[in-house]
Image (cartoon, rainbow, N blue to C red):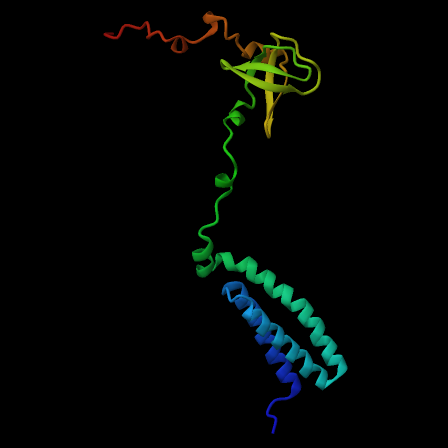
Length: 192
């Protein structure tokens, strides 16, 4: 009177178990769907062993592979579904996740060492005193430095070479500053 072969029951129960595992990811059920899924998998293996030991072992191995595969796919796909977006909201972009550090804008700028850097010390860049770390040799006070990178909480500098030294200007030298920085108005005739 049995309408289905044990192999057909095994396949149906395995598909039902995989569907219940995926639903457990989507619908919080307090573990009820997981218990039903486990029962469906056990029933699938039971019917597969009724067909023969080889079929039973094959179904058992396919369940061991299928459950993590379906869980991984569900977790990977779920945030992109409309229901996943409703639960989690929109995923943040990389720019929103990265912390904003204004010191990153200093990379490539030229400053002056204000203390002996063995390897750390004070550097003045654009009128601001910054704690920095020398990359390589010690740096003497008054020597020009170039900011190489900002790593976590450290500003890494190296001694400036040749042309870079001429590009930097001494903040104490008022004559080397542009007139706009000094607070004077333009000397051009406003009526001309």
